[in-house]
Image 1 (cartoon, rainbow, N blue to C red):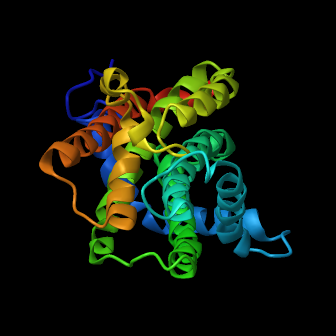
Image 2 (image 1 turned 180 degrees about the vertical axis):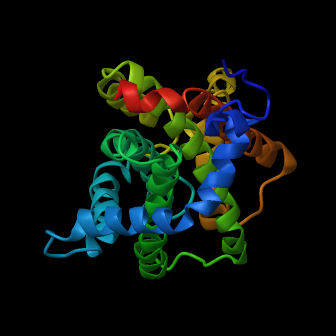
Length: 277
């Protein structure tokens, strides 16, 4: 009869993991080549059958801006160039909506891969945000065209824009990971989210200026994370100033806080996704 000792006990890979969240973060670094390939695949798949290709990333927000400007420019006075105001808000919102939806669908797409080989589960959400970042950089081209066409000033505060994009990316990834986890257990979450997303957009000052919000309701808008993140995006583009500490801290808190919560929530269930999806 063989007696198992500490030396002869089988050791499983899962026994080596001390913290799922930190392990997953380290694995993203190890699988960075796969991450690049996933981002490349997403971009090529999206545009390979399109006649205009990548140009759609620039034409889509531009077309939406033109329609909304024609309809609402006389109704809302944003205190400057309304096309620049609305396009800067749309770029921030499109990044968020497309990134969160792509994170959910990415996990579903990756279910077959997860059942065959080991890959870090968070890589599908991270690649979705990586793709959204590439699209965002391309979308800045029509924004510059609109600024120059409308003869709006080009502020030096545009140098602050990468900070606003990073905070928005953190928040988008956090929400995307939370939604991915919920959709793995409740498939209807994806459909319900589309309804919530529409309502969320109209509760965020994107089409209308913040100045039309009644003073007694402004406090409620400040509980909306996208209110702060869209404002960060607009300050450097439209208003030409850096955020005050009172404006920056809520955006920083929402961005970093939701990312940490989403990452912890997602990784706590990471071993179950291959069986749930």
